[in-house]
Image (tube, rainbow, N blue to C red; front, side, top):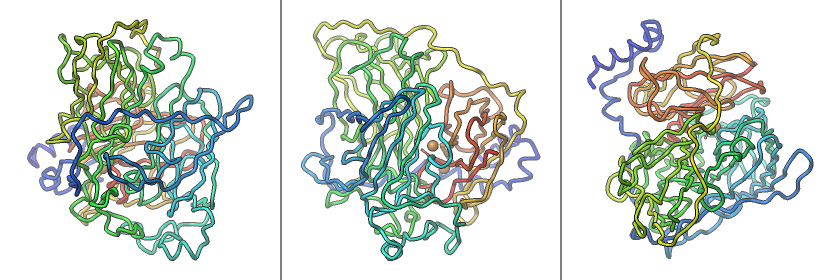
Length: 533
Ligand code: C2O
Ligand code: CU
Ligand code: CU
């Protein structure tokens, strides 16, 4: 797309006013860099694909429960894991595993997770997709300092101050009340007033989310409710959460990451990787190109893209005759109204797709590869399903109608706000030309109100809003795309695109985040606060 067409597309959607407010960037140069990320190659030989069995993260048991709540404990610690066969990788983990343990909770019940930090760095836990009070949302300067840490110890490690080394903002201060800092353990409380959905929890420390997630700080958080349980969807062993993440490994087996400072005292990646870090190994639930034996039956696959920057276009190979292999039943915010059959799905960082695949459409013994058509070389393959030959029973079904969704009404919107996700002339990732600064609100929506938020991009940006899910209203002034159905909390903007979403701010006042979920963009300040009041 040349500059003129870029302007044309932008102007058509944004109107002259919006373009007047935000100077159009050097579009041609930025579009040339439209590829989200750069490949980091491993320094170790890579294993053959489809040899490691697919692991399924263990479900965490509560330490206690009462009439209204379930209490969990997770210790964040360093653990030596065997991710590539025969190689030892030191990971930062929730509870000693990668992915961390799965929380499986009921809607309507309160969940309290007590996190204890035994890592060498401060952390912040965010429940992605959670409808969470602000003090438990994982605001990026609400640090949980390591057990036993003193100010001196942290200062020596450059992490004594939440603002230490913030990209492009060195020396800036955070207000004492902006950062709620504790040492050792913190309880995160999730009220559970939201519908069944596939959520995930991950680190969210300001400027260091990319390396922290890369080293392992992610896990599933599954919410269940009666409405969904009443449906005949595949369940039990035929309900598989699949966390996709690409990684690269250094010669000593550690996770390779192109941080400017290997000790992570100073944030950021080397210039080459500004646009995002891609690995050459595809992990599913922490295993490289795994294989799963499946029955000739329906399976529910809860796909999560937990990669820092990689986009996937997922497709089964071979396709069953008749196509439409991937039947989408849900997205980020739970069930869709009606299933949508796809041949392929495109999934950006942090998005979730809840799919049903009927493996009985394949002859017994078929080896079905899950492919990534956006990948190249080894990253074109994701995992293998080996379809069993025994006769099995399957009483699951995908109903024509899954639920009734409330449609937010654009007429009810009391404000339209525009957020430009772009790289500045200085090479920083910005929202509305501003670098992230904790405590500075970019928007102040009123509690209970509905607004239209219009995002536009230069290069690819998966845009994520905390607190409330949203509904996609339009793309480039036209209809939403094929992957925009239902409630979402992350929407992928392609280069030079404008996407409008409808969002209603409910239940919780306070300070929340809006950011790009390409983690290198996020860490390099493509983030903003909004305050619900
Ligand atoms: Cu998954 Cu603010 O993040
Ligand atoms: Cu989030
Ligand atoms: Cu981005």
